[in-house]
Image (cartoon, rainbow, N blue to C red; front, top):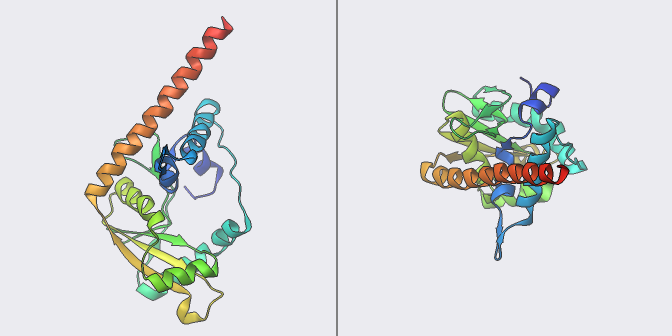
Length: 207
């Protein structure tokens, strides 16, 4: 299925996506971050209603969407590798979690495309690394789709041509994936318990 369609939105309704892993597992000095509870409420709402929750899109996010296809073509021209687009892949073991990568490369690879603001792109060019905040997302994609590497792609068409595209490969790390799986299973377990508690509490109140 094509990403962004109604079919795709329904297929991921109530499911934790790879791009949400950081929200689910974010921590502070005092414990879990506030984003965890917010995300949990969103997933619970989708599970109970069967309706995808609308998400806010700002100008920067829209810019990224509008330029994703150009970034994909720039990657293909740079690497000589063709990118196949896909819709969704569910985790092979854990229920209610999935990945929707920006593309498949050959039999072993993926790509993760970001079209950030120019300042962020320059920061990535200077560091020559994939930003750490996207590592869990890429590892989860590799696990869900059984791939061995993911090319992180940063693209900004506003810059001179030789500075527009940055590509760096992130290799699969099964030890890190196992730790993420453990934490995601805990998060999904909390979602299930919270749904059960809501149903129990308010069913009793109605009697």
